[in-house]
Image 1: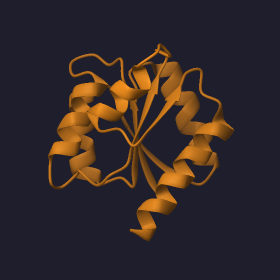
Image 2: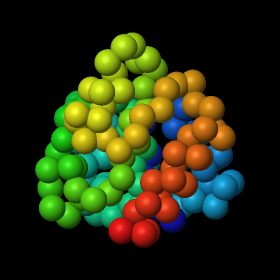
Image 3: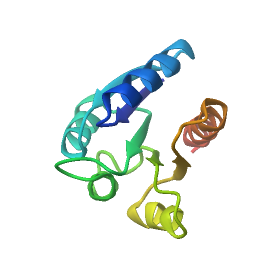
Image 4: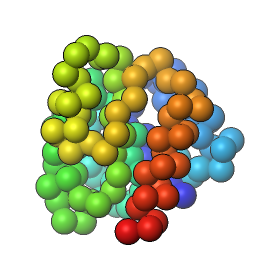
Length: 124
């Protein structure tokens, strides 16, 4: 299974990609929302982990673009954000995200969300 990780923070990106690869996932990287949209179209990942606070194009807009395009609209997106304010989950879902997780990442919780979306996607 291929996961696109869209994350601008190098330390977060390296840590999370290594941990996901150890769990058997093939991880591709993008460092901003615009690049994330391009990589998603080129690589057709099974799932996208989208940081919401990104340079160039933020995660909210990148997700809207992905969900609005026929070739990427069915790829599940999990919003990753340090913004755990009231209403942020709803904002992520309104942008088209399929789930939401907060930073700092708790890997067991995130893996549960990844596996649930990948299983649901393979059934449909």
